[in-house]
Image 1 (tube, rainbow, N blue to C red):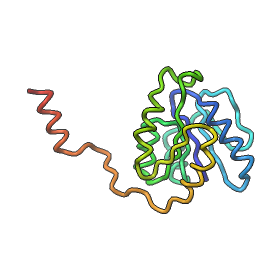
Image 2 (image 1 turned 120 degrees about the horizontal axis):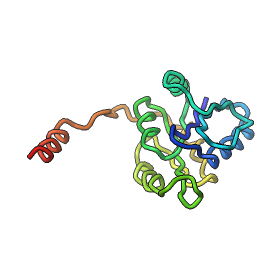
Image 3 (image 1 turned 90 degrees about the horizontal axis):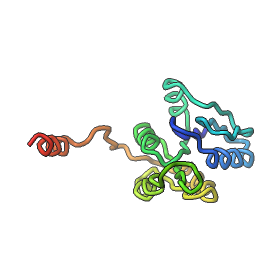
Image 4 (image 1 turned 180 degrees about the vertical axis):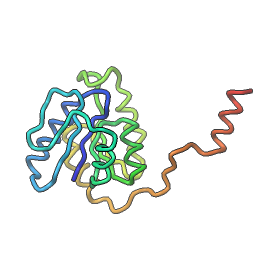
Length: 159
């Protein structure tokens, strides 16, 4: 099963539409999409506007891979759960966000193990196949910043 998520803040019609098209071409793969407040309603995949936290955790746990916008929350979920992630950024010029920060975020994240970049819709099929073929994920992901970094930061703020 593939989880498609656009995060909790806004819809991402271009990604949802592209994954719906992908789902029509791959009817053997179950897709579940969290579409937010997007206006495009998929027909080739199960979808809901929002998952509760417990539903989201259960869906992530059952997913083979995650397909998402290029948001840091999605990246952290992927790394914490050891799931490969395909990320596609929103574009300000298309009215998908107010800035192009997701393009820049993906530029930085694309080099991380387990991240498969899809800069545009046409890149999604290849990125999905690479993610599905991934045999291992990083196992040393730390949820918290290293202690020495926190101590240096604390000293810089307090002193």
